[in-house]
Image (cartoon, rainbow, N blue to C red; front, side):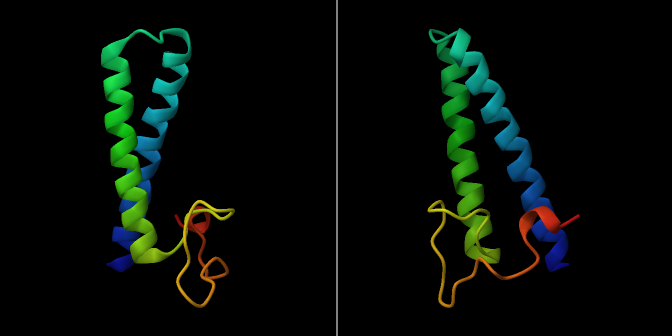
Length: 85
């Protein structure tokens, strides 16, 4: 059950991250679109919250300064997010 919740949370992160990337690309060519900017900011806040939840429950999503680690160093713990399916 725990792995199902972990996989569900990762799927949600991927979906919201896709939306932020697409809106970012759109805003590069339409910087005055207020609705798109509002959507981007909303999705970004959701993404940050989801990533925080995931990292609090399961450990880092990435390394190099994007997530703090509990003691001991958690980055070496398996499985890594991209190894789950």
